[in-house]
Image 1 (cartoon, protein in one colour):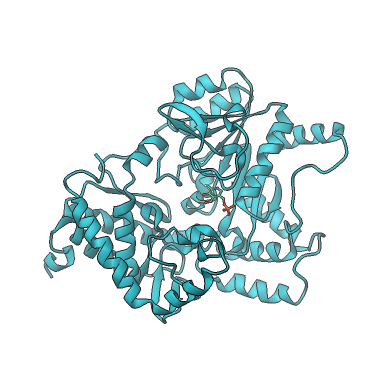
Image 2 (cartoon, helix red, strand yellow):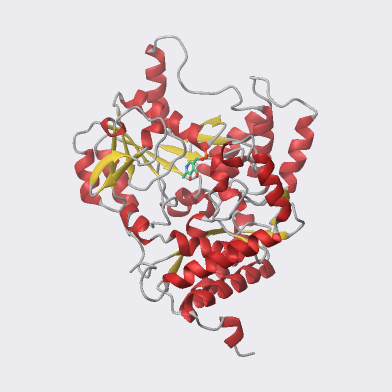
Length: 464
Ligand SMILES: Cc1ncc(COP(=O)(O)O)c(C=O)c1O
C-alpha cells in the first residue's frame, strides 16, 4: 500500500504544502533576498545544485550551525535532525574537531607529505574497523571509485555488481538501474556517454537467486553494497542475506565492499562490526573528519597480498587513483579527533537510547493518526516510510516513496523550527541531541500528521 491510499487524502497534502510554502516565504525574507542575489551567479542559485532539492520556494540560508542548532539568515533557530545528510552526523563543529582545526591551522593544512597523525589514525582505523590497510580520499565518492579500481586490478576482472536503487556517490560505474526488470543507465544522468550496463550488473537487494545467477560466470570483480540500503528509502537486509552474500562472493572469487558512509549510524564499528560482517573492502566518508571533506577505505590482508602482486608487475605511470588534497594534515588531524573522541562505543551508547525513543514516538504518532506508514531505524538513523509494509528492494522502496507527502512533513517541521532531511524524511540523532530536541520533533510530526489525517494531534488527546 502506498501513501496514495485513501488514508492520505492527496488534497490535504497539496493544501498543506501550499500553506507551508507561503508560511516559509513570510518567515524568511532575508533568505529570499539572498536567493535573489545568488540566482545571478550560481547554477540554480546555489553553490551545489542539490541545495535546492528541499521543497522550499528558495533555499534557507544558514548563518550558523553548532551542535544540533542551526540559525538562519532571518535569525530563526532550528533543531537539526538532517545534519548535512550525515556529513555532520556527530553534530556541527564538534568541539574536538573545532580544536583540531584551530591547532592545525597554525601548522599547515596540506603538504603532499604525511603528518605524524597518520601513525595514530592508521592504528585507530585498524582497531575500530578491523581491517589492516587504509587510504584517505577527499570524498566517499572518491573512495568508492578507488575501491572499484583496486578490485579490478586485484581480480583481473572488469565487472562490478550493485543493487537497484543504490547510491555510492558520483561514481559513473554505479549509475545503472532496473526498469521493468531490465538494466539501463540511470535516468537523469547528465553527460553520460557510456552504456554503463556493459561492465556493471544491477540486481535487486535481498534477491539471492539473482545474486547467484549474476556471480555464476566468475567474472565479477566486486560487489559494492551498503549493508542496509539508505538512499532509496531504507531497505533492511532479510535474515541470512549478508551471510549468503558473503559466502556466494567468496565461492565465486568476487570481492565485497561494504560502504558504511550512512550506516556508520549503527555503532562505532559501523553495521559491519555490529553484525559481524567480513568485507574485503570497507568505505566510510562524510562524518569521518567531522565535516571536513574526507573519506577512508580499507582492505584485508588477503586483498593486500593481491594488490602487492599486481603492483609488482604494473607498468609505471599515474594509477588513476588518488587526488592532491587527499590524506592532508588537516584531514588527519580532524579524523584523529573524531576517532579518539566521537566514534566510540561510549558515545554511541549514550546516543542510541534517544534514537530508540524517537522511533517509538514516531510509531505511536503514526498509529494514532492511522496512517499507512511506519518508521525504520538503523542505530542513530531513522526514517518514515510512506507505506505500511517494509520494502524488500529498491524497486519497492521507490514505489512506496511519496515525495509530496514527504515534502509536506518536512516543510511543516521546518516552519516550526525542526529540520529533517527532505528526501525520504531521514532523521539523525547525534551525540548532542537532547530529549527536549526529540520531543520538539515529535510535536512537529504530530502536528503535520494531524493535518494529513484530519485527526486531532496526539498531544491534544493524551491524558495527563
Ligand atoms: C552510501 C553512500 N556512499 C557514498 C556517498 C558519497 O558521498 P560523498 O557525496 O561525500 O562523496 C554517499 C552520499 O550520500 C552515500 O550515501
